[in-house]
Amino acid sequence: MIRSFIAIELNEDIKKELGLLIEDLKPLAQDLKWVRPENLHITLKFLGGVEEKKIEKIKQALEETVKPYKPFTVKIKGIGQFPEKKMPRVIWAGVEHSETLLLLQRETEKSLLKLGFKKEEREFTGHITIARLKNHHDIKKLLNKLPDFKDKDFGIQEVNEIVLMKSELRPEGARYEIIARFAIGN
Image (cartoon, rainbow, N blue to C red; front, side, top):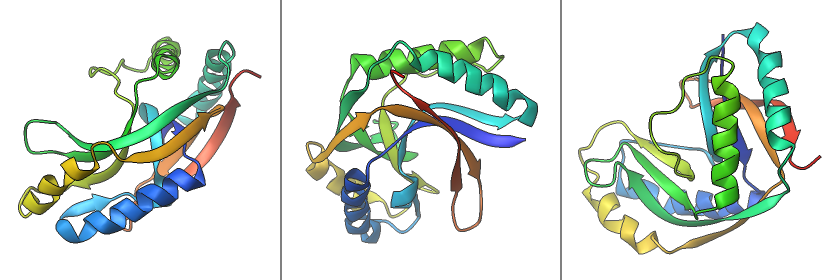
């Protein structure tokens, strides 16, 4: 089984900006699993464990999914948490609303539904996970600081491809490897 997901890679400038933010926030809470800057991305669909023989069908579906689109941009802005009201499980950087991104995600979801993948129950919200919480003690300083970054601009991301990624979970953190790239508007 290949643990995998479909994503939009981030450009180096945005990874650098978010990396600096992560370094600023790290001292405020110890029990978070911070995402390494090189692993930051926008997830369109998490697939989970996939049989190797199914990868070719996924590639074909994604190739078809991106065809009608033209490259577009999204703005990376703000910091928040999921869930918003309760104790958070995820700290994220925001992706401003983009109708094109939403349509691309929905079409990705639809094409994979035909291959037997379950539809995501939650409504898609474009975001970049920057940290996951292991527990909730000693996060008050961090939660108090997050509103300072709610309007911080991290840059513009050009979206001209999506990628099918392999994810290996390791003690030192996830390791990602690109299985295939799908150019938008080719």
